[in-house]
Figure 1 (cartoon, helix red, strand yellow):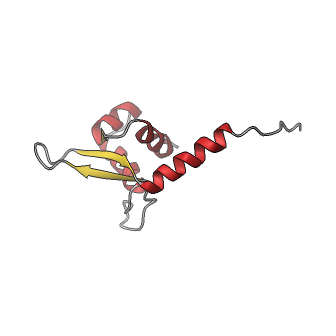
Figure 2 (figure 1 turned 120 degrees about the horizontal axis):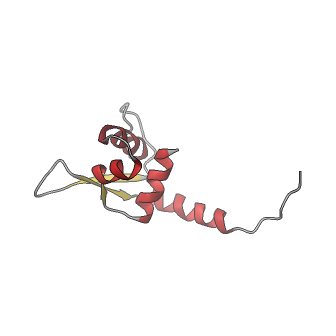
Length: 94
C-alpha cells in the first residue's frame, strides 16, 4: 500500500527525491528505492516494472540524487483514478 501512496504523492508533487519520499513515509531510503523501482520501468529483480514513474539523476552537483516524476502511463492511471473517484454510483444496500 505504501508504494501506491508513494505513487499518488509523486503524482501530486513531482520532483521529490528518494530521501524526501523516505522521510515522508517514515521508511529507510533503501525501502523507498525498492518501492520506486517497482513503480519504474525495471523492478528491483531486473524484470519489467509498472512504468508509472521515472527517476531522473542530476547532471550536475550530487549525482546520487534522483528525483521522481510520473510517466505518461502513470498520468493515465491518475486520470482514471480521478474519474473513478468522482463518479456518482447508486448506493447499494446489503
